[in-house]
Length: 347
Image 1 (cartoon, rainbow, N blue to C red):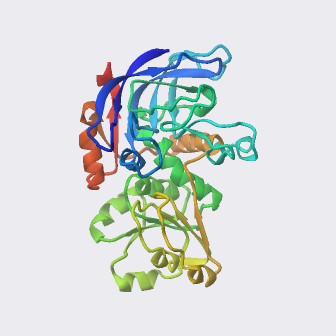
Image 2: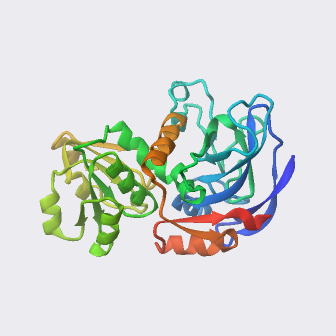
C-alpha cells in the first residue's frame, strides 16, 4: 500500500475535504496512473447526495479521467510508463460471462466493479475515484489516449461520451438518421457532436429557445422548444432515435410521441422512478431502452472516432481546490458543458 491525495465526501455534503487515501501497489495486471484531469459528472453529485446507492461516507467521486502511466505490473504488455491514458466508469469485471466476453463489461452478469463506490474483486475494499492524484486499476480497463485529443477536454468522453455513443451505435445511427437529443448538458452536447459526425440529422429538444445558437454550433440543424405545443405537433413522428439525457423526473409521453415508426427512446440521464405509458409504445411499434456507460469494445472505438473527427467535450477547467464550486454550480445547471478538475494542485 501507498498513499495519495484526494477530495473526499463525508455525509452528503458537496464541501469535499482534501485528505490522504491509500492505493494498492500494482498487481501483476495493474497499471498506476497519475491523474491529471477528471471530469465532474452529474452522477458524482447524485452519489454524494446518496441517491445512487453507493456509500457516502468516505466517498471519493470521479470516473472520467486522463493522465500518465507511472508504473505497470509484471504481466502488463499494453502500457509502459509515460503513456497517455484514459479511464472511465469501470475498473474490473468477472471477465467470464457472455457480456464480458462480448466486450460489454458494463453489463457484467456478476456486476462490474465501478471506479468509485464499488467493491474490489480481490481484496473486497471499496473503490475510490478519480478526484485524486493517483489511481491503480486493471490494464484491461485503461485506454491509450490518442495524441490528437486534448487530455482535459477528452476526460468527459470516458463517461458522458460513451454514454451517448453506445446507444447510437446500437441503433445504427448514420447518414439519413434523424436523431433528437433531449437536454443540452454534459451528456447532450456530446450526443449532438457525435450524432452529427456520424452523418445524422440532429435536433435538440429544449424547454427554452435560449440554446439555439449553441445547438447549431455543436452540429444540430434544428431546436424544438418542448414548451411550445405547435412545435411539438410539427415534430410528431419525426425521429428514429431520441437520446433522453434529462437527469430529473419527467413524463416520457411527450418524447415517445416524437418518435417515428419503430423509433427508439433511450433514457440515459439517470435511472429514476417513472411511469411508462404502454399505449404510446404500441402506437407505431416504438421502443424504450436505456444504457449504462459502455464496455471496452465501444469505448476504444469511441476514442478512435473522436480523434479522427476532432471531438472533445466543451469544458470549463478548474483547479481541484474549486471542486465545491464546481459541484454547486453543476447542481444549479450553471455549466457549459462539463467541469473538469485539474489535479496538479494535489501534489
